[in-house]
Image (tube, rainbow, N blue to C red; front, top):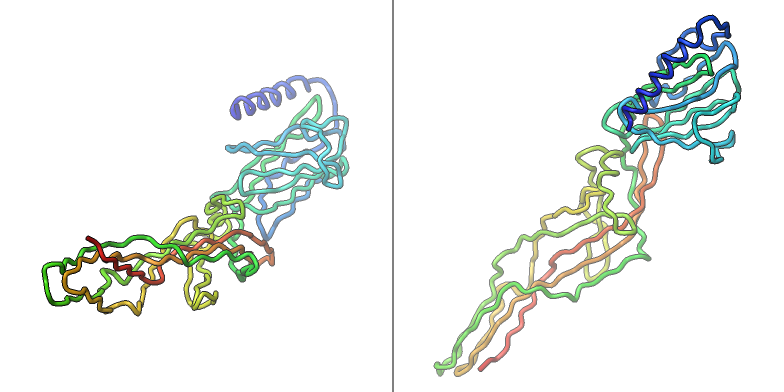
Length: 321
């Protein structure tokens, strides 16, 4: 569809040149500029010799650019391209993680304002201007903008949901002392002391926005401090995770008071000993403040952090027949 659109416009350009033969009109744009915009050179003003032109179309050289036609206050007014009869407008445009706008406030000037381009390459577009006799294409290239840096992350402690009463089975064993007249014992030795803690950043609706974070902050994503819990109270210590990552694992260790504990099985009894992991998990809302130091541009991302990890063992001995 995109290629058909370009072919149609090229056909119209050729047709317009042919129809112009023998008809004198003011050349509204004798020299067509090549516009290149960046975060440091973000505005282009194109001056026209006359006002006998309209904005006819705007399309991406290789991407489907979206656009919304607005009035001069920037409010959508339901119009579509092409504009006619010298109409003025503000046109807001973009593609994925890029945005820019085109403004025609009078017939002698066209202004192009670059916003942000967090895509992986420059965005190239064509702005078609003209009248019933002649059309011209103005090429515009919007360079990539710098990545943001993290200023701070702020947690909303009032939103915290915390749980530490979930058990997950590790293993179980049977100690059979039923045929002995002497007690026997079993000592608990953890099979592992290093475990993975699950951490996930999502938006408040639970949607994975990892790609959004990568576009604005780059890869690898920066580390931020995440809450730990000591005696069931949240603390901000040294534990860090990659902000925005939908699913990641952080290595943690358990120093349990149960390690080495002795369990005595009386003579004539059979015991089943079950070992469980004690699970600690929480959900908390956050705001991430980011900025581009060179331009001063700032943004705020909001989301929800989820963490699930082991914090101790639970041992349940029971006499069985």
